[in-house]
Length: 68
Image (cartoon, rainbow, N blue to C red; front, side, top):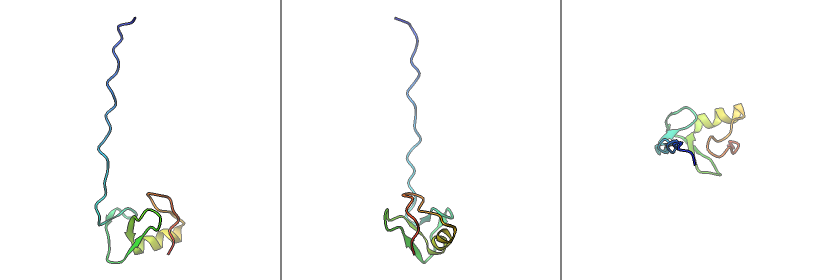
């Protein structure tokens, strides 16, 4: 057989976990009023959810349409 060396196995970055008080729409801390995605239970600022609904955006995690 050949004496070729195999490449090293890939290294993956550590899995990302967002803090409990983090809005994925504006990438910052949650405000007082919150919106919870009915499908995956991801939490967003209510104001960000209203803007997302007006812009036709969906939940970042599960792609569920934002319903208020």
